[in-house]
Image 1 (cartoon, rainbow, N blue to C red):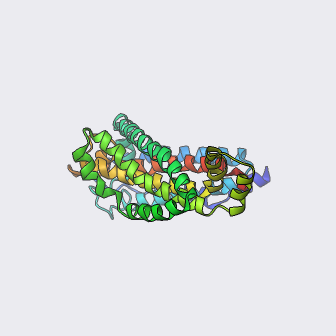
Image 2: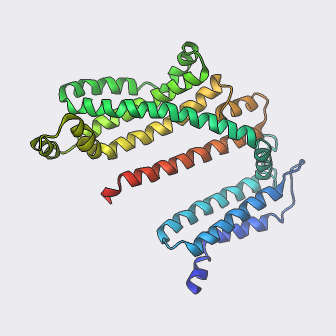
Length: 307
């Protein structure tokens, strides 16, 4: 028990105490800052953190969680000090954290609808890129002559910023959703294809020679030998494609969308509603972080043999 108590004497808990102390400072903004919202939010995080500290036996994983929470506390403290507690920043442009939480709660149904729309579009375009780029990359990488020439083609198209496709996609395709799926496909396809081909090129020759000696069929060679061997580099391309997809979708939604988080931010930016702009930015960051976390879990599972 003493060891558990000693572990609580860390920077995370110190920053939590500092956060509570700065709540004693007077409010400087002229409008209601809903300070109770951020207090409840931080206390909720602290309760979860303390429970994890006592229950989690993996010290390395707990240290990562501890550092993330500590950084979050520090950012919230700085945010609150510069806004509601000192009014150093303009209150119209930089809302206090409590105000942002209040707006998030008020707009929650609209935000959930936007997140759902964005994620469904991402899934459709990204999966389409996966099922086309990986088999094509495996086949191109296997045939050296075709692969060498096709590599330059993929580098050419991959070097073109996918954002340039957005105006054409919106103008040519019948619906914005179709245009968005195409843009996500175009953004994800080339990184995944290039990574798959590079992964195949880097497979040790003795692995392929051993498979040929065993008279492995073409499909088995592609999906049971080459795919597992090239998987680390393929997953790197998949991760890159996923990141680009969110950037492109947000851009597309801001240009011609009627739903999604990009549209949410653009719509309220036209009215100078900076509270909702901050809400949209934070929600986007959280959604991308959560999806990236689950992608990393999947990647760790698929590559567990490397450990």
